[in-house]
Length: 488
Image 1: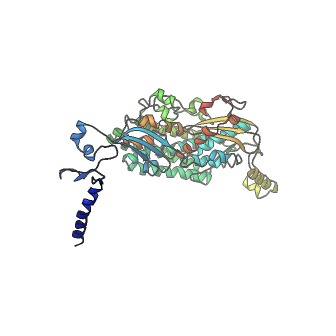
Image 2: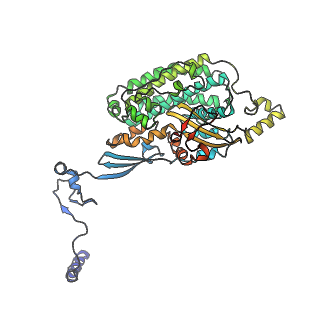
Image 3: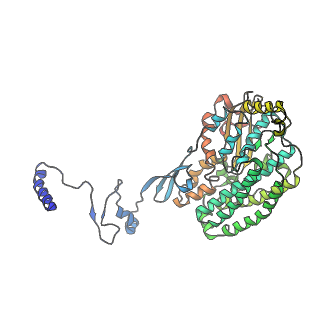
């Protein structure tokens, strides 16, 4: 009844609309198409390309028209892990341009360090990259030790070298296994995380914390190794080599793995050098550059190891380099266990080293000494320095400026993944959308657990003013290396 009344009213309104000259054409043009097609009706998009032309193969062959999309990849995407946003310009599924946006975990770390003592600033480096904790601490500690002009005891150097390689394995396990999981291999991920759990237990036994250890300190390490730890590390290292063989047996020769990594993210030697790539990103392209060999620190000049180098510069070669670094790290660990001497683990300087805990319970002077040292810190002579190490993801650098007080005047950090992410655009261009997660895993450093460090790296380029580094670069009596302004 109501529908009949509505039709009657519409018929009566039609002459009035026509007499006033109003348009009666529908706002959206529609066309009836055969029933066997995708939809009974279709609409034109904003560019005038119809849905039928996009879906009909014959129409694409006669007049190929692909829609251009600008989409967000992350931070909600599982492969972005909440800390990276890529703005992708697509032609269908072909990437025309990739614009990485970082800073989603930005906390102003470098500015916070300026308001902390040299001891209080150390835990911030654990949180820059929460899979390479002790290597970050080591880089900062080396910079402070240069300014203080102190020599670390032998045993402390061997302990640092030992845990530096354990941290390298910890990092590479995360990089390789999460990449395999993104591609579709779940079994190696479960195997590898059992090994990571054992490594984190070593962290906990030596420092009391599984992640943020704050173990490597300026002047040495916080605590001596507990009883039985070296034997347990030796037992773990003995069986881990067979675990690496098992992972390789499942992954390395797998046809699907090869199809998704060979030829993907290819970088030539010259491109790697032009973009300032370091670490596996540089060595995978055929450049044998490793700071542990070129500019050794701690005890790397007293251990023997080889530097794995790739040939093709693609994701598969970088994967092979990381797997081979597992074995080279095991070689270094074995030498550390055999060569580690007895002795003190901190520099013998009461202005830097706190008193033993036992003496604090017996001596009022020791208690006061401890309180003053951790509340006010120690003063560092005026000067500036740059310290660099071979972190698991590449060259990690700390540029430190002291004005003679108990707080850093300026601390600038070179994160290895920043340069790698800058090359994401040229590596992803003209490739398919399905390869983005592969690029992020083995092309842009660890992906994306290194991005807290990447987000922090917005600061050095913004805050490098003349008052902290000079007009053209850094040149100081405390440093034997000239650093161009463009490299800081």
